[in-house]
Length: 299
Image (tube, rainbow, N blue to C red; front, side):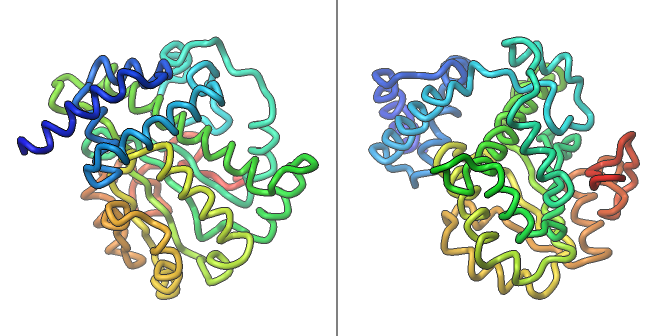
């Protein structure tokens, strides 16, 4: 609408005086209107609130030097992408093994997830086997990784940042190597959460704190990065957990979440959104890619 166009221009003018991380600068230069719009959408088209959100996120990125760190080879290699090309896109040379790999080793068997191909709109897909997460063990290992004085969520959040940064690189990859028409430009990702095995233990205590920390990270620093979240193979208890957690989500994020019953509904919805050939067999698809779609430790 004309009003929204005016707000986009007003925000763009405000952002010119804010320190800009390299990644934001590149996005601002290539898609200025889209870039400004996502901050406004995240703050209900309030220019002042969007400007404050952007400034906080920009300073956070600069502080953590997120645009100056190598992310590839990834600690969890994405399926369907050439990591050498990704390494060149991100720059800064190959990633050396370090703390992320220690965190990965601690979490791989109790919190399995992976970037796995793309949906029918070309958006990268993150699959999380959320129902298989072992909350008590996850909290215990997070505490084990924490240094004296660090909160136990610190390394979990750092790992979450890495997953988000890898996802941003996959969006860039799709636009550079797969998108032919500018109208098909990819700006978001799709998430699939497999809830099979989920119970109330996933919505209480330390598990709740970890999930809340992850959600706060998304909402503060990665605005409008989510296209849809499909909560599949959802047991009845998942809706109870959703009611507990829902108040912590922005309304526009709540509207992107869809629950699917186990079996045929899960398989049908994922085929419609992603394509059965890119959906792992354990989710009702036909993909049986090398190394497993989202393997558990020891698979």
